[in-house]
Image (tube, rainbow, N blue to C red; front, top):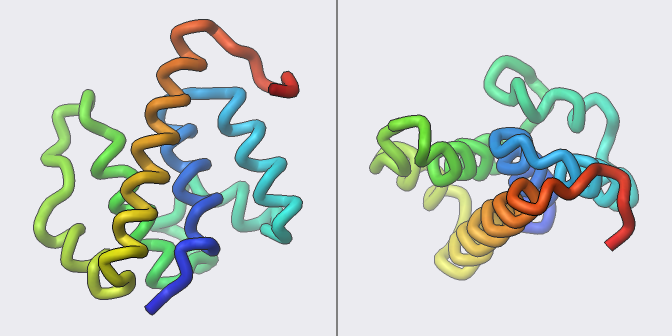
Length: 123
């Protein structure tokens, strides 16, 4: 089974990109860099499907993130295919952690968008 720690920064960054939350994108990139994430991967999270920089586990977590986040787009949401692919890489506890990470990121993205928080501020 994979580590959710390696996916957490990517999940946060991708959900924040989708939601257009500049302070969360900014903070997510800064945090990921401190954890040793590379510029190459950070710059390519938005195009994760078309690049070779991500593992199967990370791709599954990113697909789940997009499906759970793009609810306003009229997308089908988390399909059985997406769920099964993610469940193949993570156990129940890890899946719960990823889902909570996605939900909390979406929650704070919406707060920041509502109050028009700007990138670069220290909370």
